Structures are given as structure tokens and as C-alpha cells.
Length: 105
Image (cartoon, rainbow, N blue to C red; front, side, top):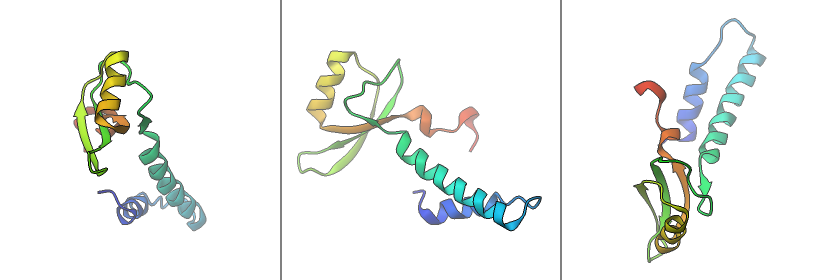
């Protein structure tokens, strides 16, 4: 899991020796805020149908109301609405948005 400590460690590793302390502090804060923004921005409401032929990760509630996740492909409008209702999907994101480009870590 990417927790607050790992985000801060990554921000510190981006230290730029060519700028002063205040600028480095601002860069670290901006980095942390950017990570927080991204973690929320990748998720879409269940009412929004995925575009194209993408694979998605979705969050759903089981019959006990416990959050779970699944991975699946994109459906037509009617099938998507049925899939969302049947599986109690709460939100989803594109798998492509989670993976690094070009296979690099």
C-alpha cells in the first residue's frame, strides 16, 4: 500500500540541490498533494460507463456490505447498468491508469 510515509519518502528522494530550502519544501509538498489528488482522481462513479475496450478495476459491496474489488472488461450501456446494479459497484478505475507506461517500475 502507498501510505503517507512512502509518499513522503518519495518526495524527499526528489530533492533538487540546485534550489534553496524553501523551494525544496514547496516541491515536496506539491509532490505529496499530487499523489493524493491522483489517488482520488483515477476513480469514477459507477454511473459513468467506461469508454472503449478497457479493462477496469471496480469496487463493490458484497451481501454483508463489505467492500471488495474485481477486474473485468467494458460492457455495452445496458449491460453496464445491469452489471453495476447486480454487483453493487460503487466506483471503478481504468487498469491502464494504475500501471506504469512502457513496463517500467
